[in-house]
Length: 476
Ligand code: G6P
Image 1 (cartoon, rainbow, N blue to C red):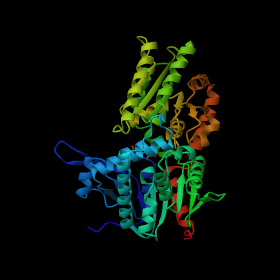
Image 2: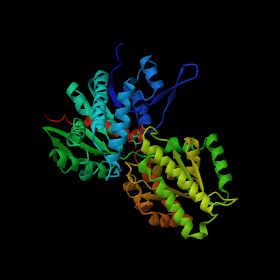
Image 3: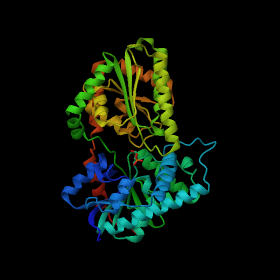
Image 4: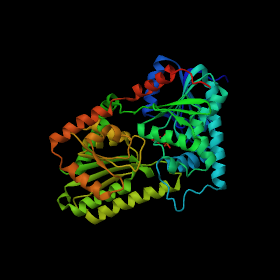
C-alpha cells in the first residue's frame, strides 16, 4: 500500500486517536485532545499533513494492521515488547527521571544489562519513526518531531532525507549538565546528537533551552552562540523558545456545557459554604502531590481557623501505571489523603476530596469553583493547569505556583511563588491565598489569564512551522 505523503509531517509517540477492542472484537476509535491536536487541525485546513505516531495498545496495533486510521494518521505497529522497553524503560523511567531530577541517587539509576536491552529497543523504535517519516515527507517537507520519546529521530531522519526541514520540540524541562551526566556517556551523547540532527530544537522556556545548550557544550564540546545556535560537527541547530499557552476559546466554551454545570453543582453541594483549594494532575512523580497534601495538613494543624472552613479538592488521574514507581506513588497519595481525613474529618466535613478517575468535565468544574489553585511540581516543562484555571475561573482564583514549573516564567509575577520542597512555606502561601482580598484576587486572575493565553496552541504550532521554514538551510 502506497503511503500518504505531505508537506507537513508531525511525529509523536501518542497520536491523536486511540482504539479500544470491544467485547465483540470490533475496534472503536477515540479522538484525543491537547495542544498538538488543535495545532495540527489548524494546519490541516490549510494544507495536507500527516501525523506519524506509535500504536500504544493491542487495540491500536490491531487498527494499524487493518489500516483503520484516517489517511492523515499513520500509526506504527511496533512490536509490543520493543515498544514497552522503549516507552516504559527509556522514555518514562530514564529520560523522564533525568529531566525532572527524580532519581533517588544512592540506589538509582543502575545502568546494567537490562538498561542496555531497553536502550537497543529505544534505538529500534526511533529508527522505525525515522523510516516512516522519510516515507511520509514530500520533497522539502517540514517535519516536526515531538519530545523525549523521539530524541534520536531527527538525526536518523536527516541521514535518510537530507532535503527535509526538521524541528524537534521538548515538552519537558531539560536537565542541567551535572545531572544529565548521570546517563552513560554514549547515551548522553547520542541523545544530544540525535536532537542536533534537527534544524531547530524548541523548548517551552528559555531556562530549558539554556540547560540543553549547556549540556551540548559540556558533553559534546559544541559551540553555542549568544542567540542560542548550537554548532556541532559542522551542523548548526537553532534553539527556539515557544511557550505553549491555554486555548481560551475552547476552554471557556467547554467549561459552560451542561455536563460541566452538573458537576459544578455536585461539587458545590459537597463543599457547602467552605473555601476550596483545587489541584488537578496526572499522577506523575514530578507533580509533587504528596507534598501538596502535607502542606495542607500543616495548614490545618497550625491554622485552626481553617478547620471546617476549607476543602482540598485533589484530582490525581492515572498515568503510566506500568511503571512500578508510579503505582507506589499513587498509593502514597491515597494514603496521605486518608490520613488527613482521619485526623481532621468530622461527620459534616471531609477535608480532602480526592478523585483518581479521569473526568475532564469535572476538572473544568473544579477550575470554575476554585478559590485557590495549587500547582507545586518538583519540576515541570510548562504545566498547563496553571494556565487553564485563571482562564476558566468564575470568581477569581489565587494561584500558588512552584518556581520550578515552566509556567512560572510567565505567571510568576501574579502568582504566589513556592519552593516545592518546602511544605511550611507552601502552607503559608495557601493561607495567604485563602485570605487574599477579592479585589486583589480578581486583578491577579485577569493578569494570569492574559499571560496564559498569549500563545494559544494554533499560534504556538504555526510559530514553529514558520520559524522552521523561514530559516536558511544549515551549512554542512
Ligand atoms: C506529559 C508531558 C509531555 C509528554 C506526555 C506523555 O504531558 O508534559 O511532555 O509527551 O506527558 O504522556 P504519556 O501519557 O503519553 O506517557
